[in-house]
Image 1 (cartoon, rainbow, N blue to C red):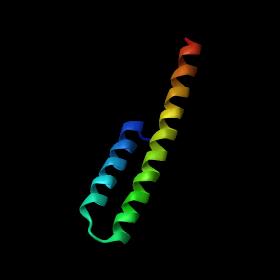
Image 2 (cartoon, rainbow, N blue to C red):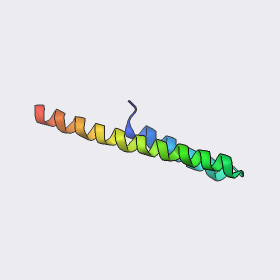
Image 3 (spheres, rainbow, N blue to C red):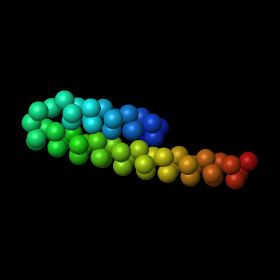
Image 4 (cartoon, rainbow, N blue to C red):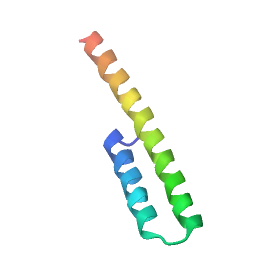
Length: 59
């Protein structure tokens, strides 16, 4: 799994690409892709936080 920031960067790149495209179809596809990357970032952050908590409890 990637680090949460990597997923967030992918989402930002898709948003930038959406701004640059002139056709609605491509813009919508990039916005959808950005939303998916953002959800992945959120899920990765939750897993990352959970792993850190579990690691702290074991120490």
